[in-house]
Length: 466
Image (cartoon, rainbow, N blue to C red):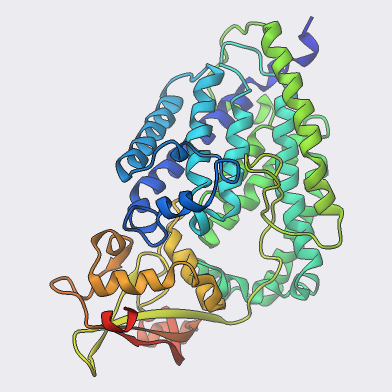
């Protein structure tokens, strides 16, 4: 009866998507566990307890409305990590098991405030919710869920392409990559090399990006092998982005979505042989059809956004983060600025620099490979350099934490120049950064040249903050 919903040829696609999404969950829960105390904990920069006091469950659905403590948050993260590992090593078949992971991560994102206001958080939630309905490995894969995953990939790619085409003129005159590799939020080890590629190649990159994001997504819905080739092009593009910069798990999840479109001729050689498959039970087929109807309705808002003149990026239209709109880098900054935080043991200095784990600081340090891990404070420091308003809710708390040598906040940094006693003063300076040329790199060994612009935060003491 339900054979028309079955897609037996896509068993390998389901296997790949489920396992990659399990890795995505593992990254998300691990990142939350390692960073929440300094960012969101009881003594963090924006404590969850304060957020819960002013936002209702309806405004931010989360388990933490029932109870919050740092121990409970850590327990949620550990349960999520255990479930993610189980999904990797075993066939996490039951629908409820995947939905538990989704509820746990949704609970974190909805109280994560500014630290979780990134498109890849919503993408992990929407992808993870759909994966729950792919069923266990013993069942034939349901075709409608695979279509919904392909539709999600379409929105990710086409939305990103539209926002570029409508946004900054540098995407239309093919000069965006003259700047992007140098000014992106968190450059990687090869970003400097990409930046100094010949400019004609940069223009070809932009042209290829437009083709991949504006043309290829339509081919995802074509029969095989065309759809598989389109998915492969998406994967190659995402791998290119992964080696040229650090974008957390955005590229990783996009690759996972692309696997949902790949036929056995692509994934069969790299996945196990499928077992004998059972037909879809009637109740499960009915659930899949209801899910499809719900997402048809939810798609109204992202489609309206993409077709509208005032398209926005990375927006959730509901508190469950389902049916979102995506996109990135509608505008490209031409000049890189960095906020450098320093401390002094006494008035007059000497001033010593705090070093962050990922963001540029020491000009002689090679930009590290961070992705698919996500350094939340480092990313917010990039936004802070664009405008002080981005630090309105957390920057005063960061300065106060440094003046107190708060251990949880200091764990977010790479190096604390005051390990024995807190500094008497903390200040922030604004610098302009640019990549060294090949000649400058040979002569100095530096990766960056930086020029001081001026004060960003004047010297402050604990007395000043009181």
